Amino acid sequence: MTDTALETVLRRDRWVIVGAISIIVALAWAYVLWLANDMDMGGMDMTGFRMIPAGIGIMLPADEPWRAIEFAYVFLMWVVMMVGMMAPSAAPMILMYARVGRQGKAQGKPFAATGWFAAGYLLAWSGFSLAATALQWGIERAALLDSRMVLASNLLGGIVLIAVGVYQWTPLKDVCLAQCQSPFLFLMRHGGFRQDVRGCLLLGLRHGGYCVGCCWVLMALLFVVGVMNVLWIALLTLLVLLEKVAPAGRWIARTAGVASVAAGALLLASSQ
Image (cartoon, rainbow, N blue to C red; front, side):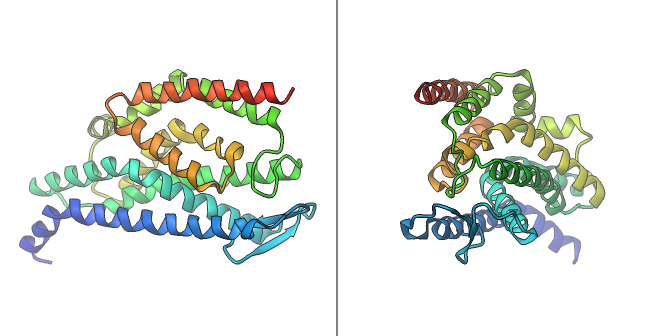
């Protein structure tokens, strides 16, 4: 590719990246909707059975141990769900990385693929997805998860809600959120644009780590409202986006924390 052609592509990188992110998010949500529709089973009574989130109507007796294929399907579900939920709020960071890379090219530096930075970010959430899958397996083995992937105990659900609300006010939440809210400052604090694939991947992984630290506890709410509850998945996606891009993002997070504690207290009261 000639320098002129390369510069033309770089000038259009914002549209290319926005388009790519939009397609990825659309595909992820299409998969989640497909799984949710399959898990619904037309309102059938699933007592004594559990659904495997494969989109093809696979079910097993509730007391049967997980198989390797079930673990793989649940892991895939979490990975795709995290992509659909987190990619929109990561877009400003990815676009900033591309912009800094374009400016670096103007100074005679090679342009490293922004895709590797995004891959590092998604790798961090894939690690979270693996942990979430293991947690879901443990909860299901303890007979605390029903066929809709909802905690069967109001007591445990209330405790989770309160824990989520408290975390929203912690210094760790504030530190991680600050790293997500200021893409340019994040790059400057961590060495700026990287010219090599490994550097892009590791920087994306670091940013993804901060994002996991900011938002991981919110994902625990899915065990209270239903792992495949599409409405709540959408609401949490919106909450994460507002926390990161809205000027009052920190207070949005804290307000959500208060609401979560209140809901947890009500659920605990109902379990008495």
